[in-house]
Length: 199
Image (cartoon, rainbow, N blue to C red; front, side, top):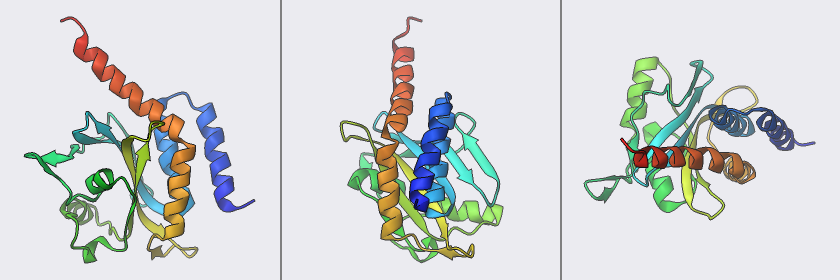
């Protein structure tokens, strides 16, 4: 049995046993990290077509394990002043509806990584490679993004993400689409019901 098949099976078992939807999202991020040997991962949902909202933030080196609503990072606007916020890689992943690979954010001029660099400076972390993958629902509408950071080789050294990593995570996202869609859509329904409740 291949390593990827083992991870798929393990995640499937964990998801079936877990009833808390937010924890299920964290399990999915952990699975994507395990598949690619990534050190960190973040899952965003698309809120009202306007904002990328942080749902899960994991970083093994820094021992960070946060799930909404305890995450205090502000959401990332998809548009600002009517203009697409395409300088943010997670936003551009949404706009293009495709995965994006970056070998080293410090050698990347196409995107704005000022927030990531500020995080690195504050924590002493060093973000290198990034893989950003869109999440689709059953109607093939984009509902979120998974971003993975710092893939590692068998010796624990940082390496770049490759096309095999991208294909594995895309397949994994498809396999877990029901969980991801359920959680994100339920949250949207809660917001909708709250907005129509009588005052």
